[in-house]
Image (tube, rainbow over all chains, first blue to last red; front, side):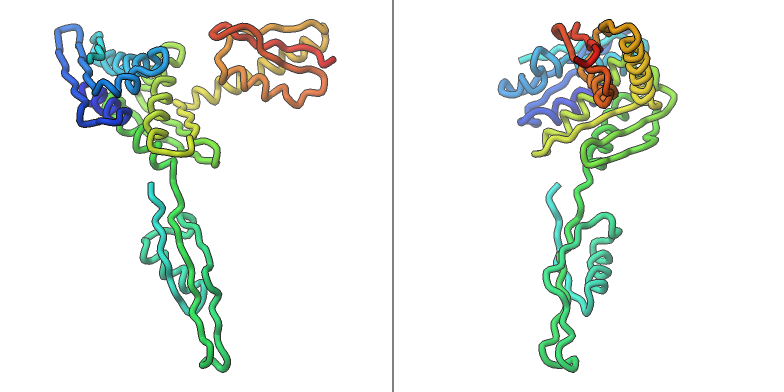
Length: 76
Length: 209
């Protein structure tokens, strides 16, 4: 899960080195925290949150295989 | 994605091409060949003898880039899949995947498939100057949907022709609407247009004036 979000974020931003992803795994849910450089926020959120929504859709499908829920938080 | 080009000389153009392909280790379909100078046998094979000079450039293969990104995404999603078909027709790259987890890849109303297609396109096009259109399909899910939309459009256009009344279709995505417009474009009797705002935009089929 973490590697998926990491790969997507690093591929989209201009400062891939600033990308940080942490994964907190619970029994039934997973929380992913994504941090990018301030200038890159738009690159992972997109117009009307379109990119962020796609990231959430893809992580949701991945988590569904393990029967878990996932929350992706994009932080400054 | 930088263009890799080499120059080769040979007694004949064919010979030069063969040498270039050997050096690059690729097939003739993978390259673009430019003849810089035709060979000249010279007079009596002595005076003014010139070799053939050619320039060989590796052809860009966008479908390989698309495949690479898609494989990264699907592997990281731990999806059980196989890439069944990759097509490139100068305008768009179309990839069809098959496998056990395809229900998951499609998602509710194709939501996951659309997200995967969008993400692949974003990543591939970030590095490109000229935007590439990418269509991702699963077990020909989209293709079948396109076919059924085409059938529906023709059926409804027949209805318009017999009743002379407009038919308003259900709200559709821009991609779906494009299919309807394209199918009925060549029809001499009916015409189509869209009405309403996204996401409730609908196609109307009407008689030509």
